Amino acid sequence: MPKINGNEIRPGNVLEHDGHLWTAVKVDHVKPGKGGAFAQVEMRNLRNGSKLNERFRSADKVERVRLEQKDQQFLYETDGKLVFMDTDTYDQVELDAEILGERRPFLQDGMMVQIEYYEDEALNATLPQKVTCKIVETEPVVKGQTAANSFKPALLDNGIRVMVPPFVGQDEDIVVNTETMEYSERA
Image 1 (cartoon, rainbow, N blue to C red):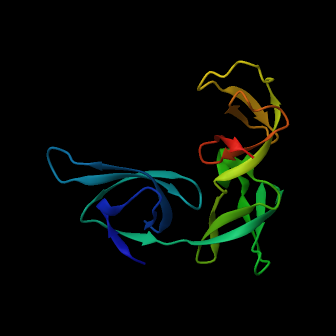
Image 2 (tube, helix red, strand yellow; image 1 turned 30 degrees about the vertical axis):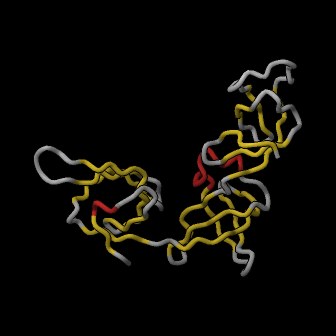
Image 3 (spheres, rainbow, N blue to C red; image 1 turned 90 degrees about the vertical axis):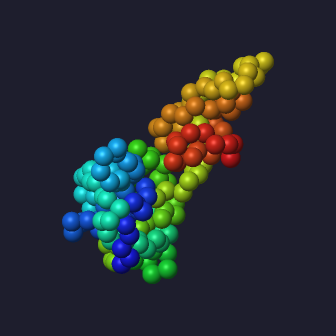
């Protein structure tokens, strides 16, 4: 595995530190008036979700880990576990439902999800950036209400509330950005 200097750590990097796998969540480069510069790195453990704040000087060497990414199909959820299948080999893998956090409601049956592997261990899942959802409840369209930047609340079929433009009505399909959890466009 390649070693990188402490000042080369970027958010999203996966690092091996103290015998555990960590992902860099937030990186602040600090140059104090006295002493050498360092990177203040907030990390999340990929196996148990615990957090750690660590300082790395530019002379410190850290193992950077490359995760293998595979597209796999979501099959079903059972006992708090999400089951995914490799469409080439038909191998199935289980991940904790908490791994998706607040984006869990956007996971749909048969959806292709990117699973990240370290050797043979599945560690993370990433939803597609855009997902199509149906609006089940929103205020009716009011004629003449075309003011710019006016949005109204809408309830989606997965239970999530998003703000939508006034021209979008009930029972319409919309595209939602899963990273920002905001309306993107009509489907």
